[in-house]
Structures are given as structure tokens and as C-alpha cells.
Length: 98
Image (cartoon, rainbow, N blue to C red; front, top):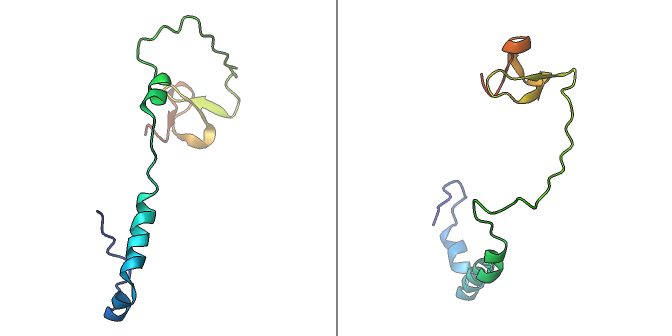
């Protein structure tokens, strides 16, 4: 269990004020957050690698590169000019790759 050393420490009086019932109630509340997962439902939604997806069709709208965008010469992703670290044209490098 992790300990938070930044929390203020309780005095002896405060420790004696907490009753055993309150502590048990807090413990029960903390454990009630657990979720039961039905294994059969989880297995139905699981797709294995190499599954036959030949009958599936993807629809993606492709937008051409805009005038305020550039293609990074290292990662080949299209970024906004605010992400330009250095270079110009074909030698442009984004801030992530610098």
C-alpha cells in the first residue's frame, strides 16, 4: 500500500476520536469499488490477431495537407506550423522529433 508522506499527521487526540466502526465503514467503502467482470462477455468482444477482416470496410475521409501544415522529415507526420522546430520544406523537423 502506498504511503503519502505529504498528508498532515494526526495528533493523538484525533486518533482516539476515530471509532472502530468508522474505520470499518471506510474500509468497506473502499473495497466496494471493485467491479465483477463476466469472463464470457469479455471473451466475446476480444479479437485475436490475424482475424479475418476481409468482409469489413473502412470509410476514412482524407484531407489534403493545408497551407499552414508541414510534413516532418523524420516521422513523416503532418503537423501544424506551430510544431515546426527547425528546417524548411523537405528538411522540416517537428518538435517531437527534435
